Amino acid sequence: MAFNDDYLNTVVFICAKPRADEWEPVGTGFFVNVPWTRPNESGYFHRYLVTAKHVADHAEPGAIRVRHVDGHVSHSQIGLWAKHARSDIAVTPVDTLPPGAIGKSIPEERFSDKWPHDTVLRPGDVAYFIGLLGDVASMKDNNIPMVRSGRVGARSQTDIRRRDGNVTGKEPLAHLIDTYSQSGFSGAPCFIEQPLIVQPTRGKLAIGSASALDGVVVGHFDGYTEVWHDTDLTEDTGLLTSANKGIAIVVPVELLRELIEKDDELAELRMDAEKEQLE
Image (tube, rainbow, N blue to C red; front, side, top):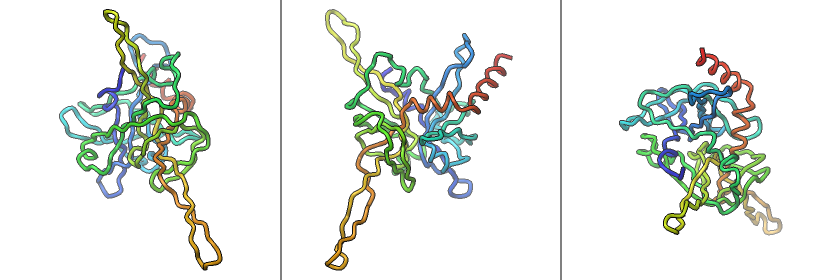
């Protein structure tokens, strides 16, 4: 599946209540689904809302803003988050959405770590991410996400400093994308695109592309620049100032899978849901 509106429709905005009775978007979230633990022939799956852990911390308990097919938006409160012990990602189960709400899910088979098995992902690949552009009120209010793009600069790098607004941290493992990231994009899905050669028609090859979820945007690279000030004409004092270097930081989808599969509480909830459905 190439990049299309289905991916746009997986994205919602994570909201907090900075003022009484008024939800305000503070970041991005998106839906994924994973198959049942038990074999089944009915196509059942478990749906999760994914975001950055620092967004979940900011919003908690929080709500999601979803757009409906008729254009209006509504808010649904979020349950408890499961949070990765080391990386800046969090998920929570989402059993149902309001009637008419737009909330497609990225299926687990579209995670880049298993799609397709012979694909080689490398620096220079095209990357897209979809999130909250808080500077445009109409988009923020109507849950209209912004699509941005860039190129993969480096994959699976360790101990990367990150910043999102006033939140700083260090990612133990991250992909680096050559594009600017803004605060509202924390928690956004990052997709990687691969070219495809379609079956020849009348002796001609058709070129297309397909894309898969590669990870979760958690901030930008927090580079530092030394600024020197001559304080008394005899001694220089070095100060460090932070700067967005135009590099977005993405937690790899493998760590998202790890969180979903290995969190004990999530595993127990899956087993309970499957048992209830079977009964």
